[in-house]
Length: 159
Image 1 (cartoon, one colour):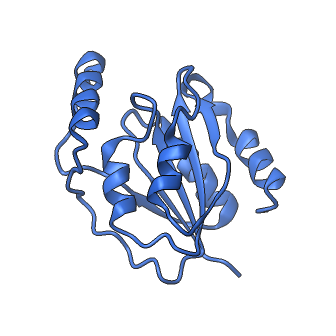
Image 2 (spheres, rainbow, N blue to C red):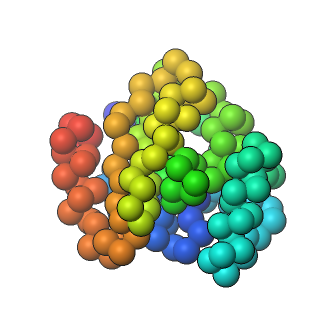
Image 3 (cartoon, rainbow, N blue to C red):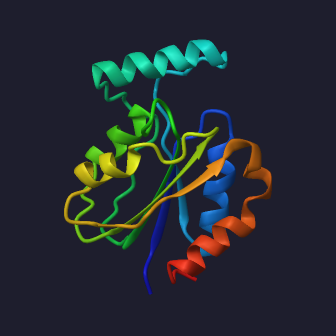
């Protein structure tokens, strides 16, 4: 039986809701990807913070120690789509682990941009892993996304 880690970065709480749905459906463990510095709660400011981090290719330090992933076969990675890809703390997480021979399941929350280029970025970052096509959920639809998560997992024969 495979063991699953659901790692997620959530700024507004939307991504965390979906992460919890994945963890429940897959009986997985949760890990919050959280930067040591706090992002602004003001929308326009956090947009500029995210843009500056992306342009500088910043790898923010994380608050929580990354768990030992040797026993995990599946890593679900969740994030909001910031400037067309994952927030920089997600890169910090992924570049700190060995994704080899693991199944990577991405999902993102967004307001119209879908997965953006995050799947291509994941492919470059998670070498020698099996990357599934991601699930994109509009932030405005998060509260009613339980069925979307289950349908996605069934389609991919994960439940």
